[in-house]
Image (tube, rainbow, N blue to C red; front, top):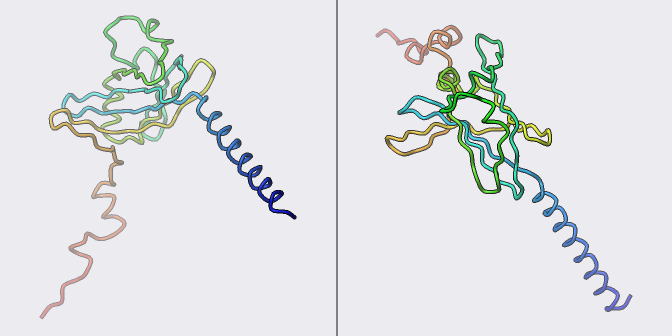
Length: 179
C-alpha cells in the first residue's frame, strides 16, 4: 500500500464521519422542542405554566392536561377549572402558536397551586401539540419575587410521626449510661 492510498482512505473516513455527525445534528435541530416549567410563585401564592419553544420551528399547542394526586388517586382537572383567565371563555385559549424563541405563560387555578405547594410529585402535566406529540417532562420550581430567586421544588419529607414509627429519634438512639 502506497502513502497516497492510505491518505485517501483517511480523508474518506474523515469525510464520512463529518457528514454523519452533521446529518444527525440537522435531524435533531429540525425537531420541535418545548421546555415546560411549572412554577409556584410564593409571595403571591399561585402557580403558572411557562412553555418556551427551544426548537427552530413554530409549535401549535392544542391542549394541556393536568392530573392531581389526592389520597392516592389521580384526578383529572376539568378544562374549565384549569386556568384563571381574564377572558370568560376557554375556547379562545386553544390552539395557540409559539414561534421559536418565544414563550407563553398561563396562570393556573388555585386548586393546582395548592397541590403544587404541598409537593411537586402531586401534579402530572401533559402538553399536546397539533402533530399529536405529548410533552410530559417539566421542571417544577419555586419563585420568590420578594427576594428575587428561583429554587427547585422538593418533595416533602415524611412527617415526624411516620419517621418515628420506623426508627428512633436521634436523641434516643443511644441510651445514656448511668454513672
